Length: 101
Image 1 (tube, rainbow, N blue to C red):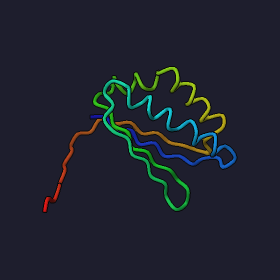
Image 2: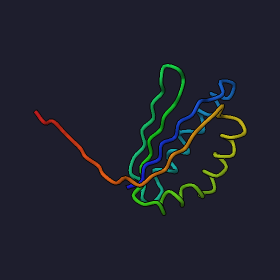
Image 3: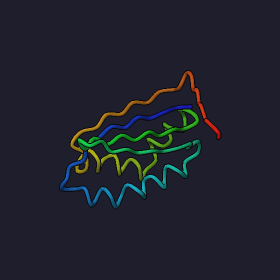
Image 4: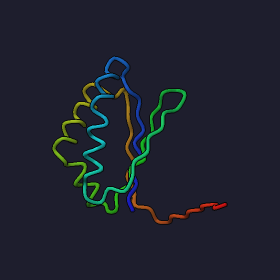
């Protein structure tokens, strides 16, 4: 399993435009081979964190190079993001607990 941690801050003047594009890009990701999950959170200070999981690093590479995603990445750098950081890593250990009542 490969996890991507994407932390970002949006530029407010392009927020509406971003909100229109983001769901379309997420739908593309969900259709990619090896896609597992996506969750996004917004902190009180405006920082956004997205956790994305793919089965293999090869799947992440294919997603990174997907043509519509490449265009969205360029728009992100040019317009949408004030800042961002991206971390990609293969998970060494995964533990899970579910308390069933």
